[in-house]
Length: 68
Image (tube, rainbow, N blue to C red; front, side):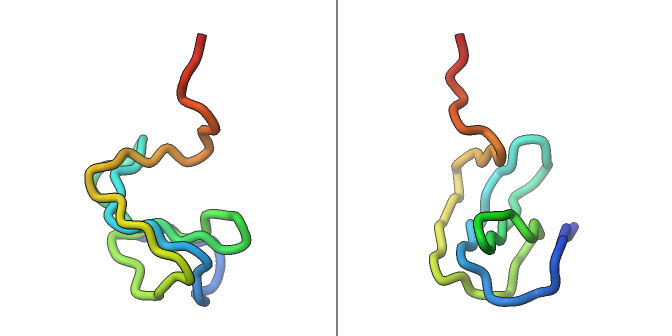
C-alpha cells in the first residue's frame, strides 16, 4: 500500500517502520513542510531527519492522547 499526496521529492522527515493507528502493518511515513505527504510500506527517499519507530504506535493528528 502506498498513499502519496504530492510528487516524490526529498523528505524533511521519514519515520520508519511505524505501527500507525487505524492502519494494519508496519509503514514508513514521509513528512515535508510539516505535512504528511506519503505513507507506504517502504519510502525509498532519505529524510533530512529519520526516526526509527519499530515497536512504537504512531497516531497522526493527535496532540495529546491523554483525555479527561
